Amino acid sequence: MRTYTIGEAAERSGFSPSALRYYEGIGLVTPSARTGAGYRLYDDDDLARLSFVARAKQLGCTLEEITDLADAWDSNECAPIKHRLRAVVAAKLADTEARIAELTTFASELRATAKTLESAPLDGPCDDSCGCVHGPKGAVAVPLTTKKAAR
Image 1 (cartoon, one colour):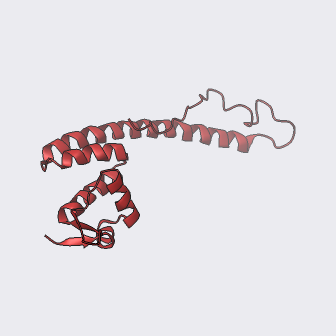
Image 2 (image 1 turned 120 degrees about the vertical axis):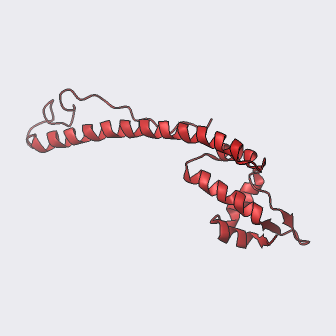
Image 3 (image 1 turned 30 degrees about the vertical axis):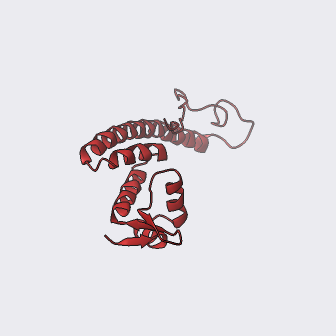
């Protein structure tokens, strides 16, 4: 099996050398060997694990989630990874769809307010009809949520 220096592994994986060192520090990826001088060496299995980490990041997984999934990776069986990843993806999809619904409602509120602001007279003080103080009739405040904290 071929080995790669940290620079080569970084180039092949798309991660920076500092990210690889960080991932090693948190136990996410461990170089397969070290040279006599202590330089990290990665092999094809390490690069495959890094590809998996990159894919999990693309799916919006947190480092905690990726670490959990990477533990399943160590079993060298796809089924445990698929089961865990399926649950993570389902939860992220539900959160994303809820956020889309909130943003769609918020966009409607912004359109209605923009229309009110365009049609209101420009002279005189702000009042209930200008759109600066109150939203359009029947408008409901939309609470925008933030991403849930990592579990």
